[in-house]
Structure formats: C-alpha cells, structure tokens
Length: 204
Length: 161
Image 1 (cartoon, rainbow over the protein chains, first blue to last red):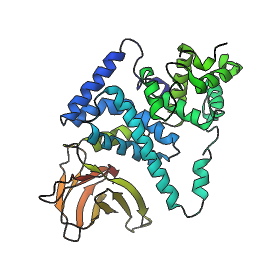
Image 2: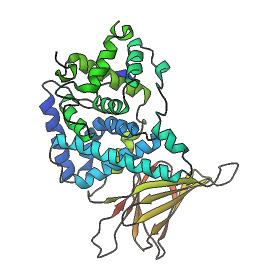
Image 3: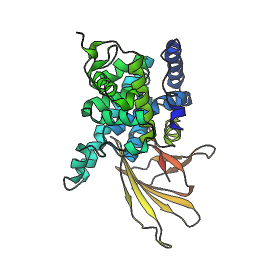
Image 4: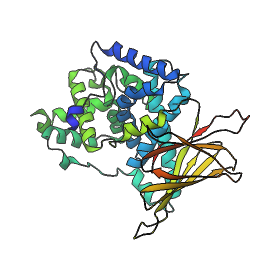
C-alpha cells in the first residue's frame, strides 16, 4: 500500500512544475489572509518530507511528530515573510532541523547517564528492516544505502522526498555544499549508484 | 574522465531516489494521524501566536483497577509556561487542570475538533484553570494576553486527551 502512495507527495517534474509552484503560491496567499485551511494540501504534500527530516536527526516517532507540528505552527508566524513557494520548502526544512536539534539536546539533558547519548549517536538500528523488504532490489538498495556515510544517508533520504526542482534548495537547507545534488548527481548519489550497479541484486 | 558525481541527474538517478522514498515510506512511515494533527493545530483564526513547545510528559497514575489515570504535560513558550494534568474520568471523559506560569488571571481557550465549540475559562490570580467533561481526542490550548497587553497569545501544539 505504501507503494501506491509513492510519489503522490512529490510533484511531477514535467510540465506541471510551474503549476505546482503556482498552486502552492495560491495556498500561501489564502493562508496569509487568514484562511489557514488553505494550507491543507501543502501540509499533506510536505509532511512526509518534514517527518523524514526529524527522523533523520535521530528523534523518536513521538518527538518527530511533535517537531513536524511545531514547525507548521511556526510557519504561520512567518507567512508574511515567505513569499515564494520554493522558499517555503527550504524554510520548513531548515526550521524542522532546528526544532529537531532543540528536542534532541533537551532529551539528552534529561538523561542522567550517557546511555541515551550513545544511542542517539550510534545508528539506532543498523540496516533496520531489511528483512521487511520483500523486493530483492529494495533489499539491495537498503543495504548499500546503509553503507553510506551518515551525512549522505541524511541528504539522500531527505532529497528523495522532494520534487526535483527543489533538490538544490533543500540540499542547501541541509547545510550541504552547492552541487551536492542537483543539477549534478553529487558524490552521495554517485557513490550509491556505483554500488548498486555492481550489485546483481539491483541490476537483475 | 569526468567524475560521475559531476554528471547531470538522469532518469537512473531519479529511479534510485524514487525507490529510496518508497523504501522509507514502507519502513518508517509518518504516523497515520500526522496530517490530521497538523491540520487541526494550524486551523487558528490568527497567524501571530507564540508557539509553546512540548517540554515533557509524566504519567502519574498506573491506570490499574479503579485508580484514576492522570498525566501531566508541560508546554514552554518564551513568555509563559502552561502545565496541564489530564485525569481520566470513569465516564470516559477527562478533566484538565492547568497552571500558568508566571501566574496571571488570563483567558484560556480549549480548542477541540469540529463541530465541538471551543471552551473558554479564565484562570484565577494564581494562574489555575480547569476544564471538566472533555471528550477524548485532539485538543489545543490558547492563552490570551491580558487586557491592554499587546503581546501575542500563546498557542500549544495539538495534544491527545
């Protein structure tokens, strides 16, 4: 079922690209005039992105859901400053990361010994769920993805959630250097692609 | 030879990223009610509220046989903290007892999902307020500034009763 919804949150990269920006722009305009319900479509479209931003920072599911919510509430206060649809996506990513850091710092402080700190630094579940993936190509992808350095995993996980025209802006919001992805492939994706192409499980 | 990293993104890259999104959607999906929670929380009639952060939650009662189950949630905003204790009643409604810090006799609004109307009470001078007979489900608190105070109201994230 997850597969059916795949990409439904991502805008087409074809001719509809301009339409998407226009649509988001119109939603923001209505929200600015007080009609926050107009943000419904934007929320549904961008929630998975914000969720993965928070989760990639190592938050629990409860904490991540909270961060997503706080990020949208903060956006309401900034709506008058954020004019372009493109700017909304990078603003949200930046804000969600900042919220996630705040929550992570706080939960570390609450733990008396270093146990939670260790947990949050280490990958909580190395190659989690490979056995949950029935498709051999997905298993290969997941295995090689987990072989990447952490910052590559974070970048690719987040970028995979957004529409192609937004790659560069989102990578920048993630603090990645220009060219880390879009318009070129960038090192992280080049590395993953190279490993996948050498894996019969992927190429099959 | 050109570094593969410098090549333009192509359909093969796109296919990898699409699969990656699909795999993450399968292994780590957002909670089913995340959209609903966010849409409820942002359905406010003004945009300038100060956002209180969820600080912590403490379960007090065990919920064992007949004992009242309560839990306490604290929200922090720059200007004020809001602490609430939620007590489950035997009739499957809940009671909310709250405190504002710093204490002030401010108007507190409890927002509930439509069609339930919002409830409004005024805290006492010690900052205490209460809502009784509240149904389970999503809720959100708004604390209005005092008369003549131009600071924004404080809004909590949506929480589940």
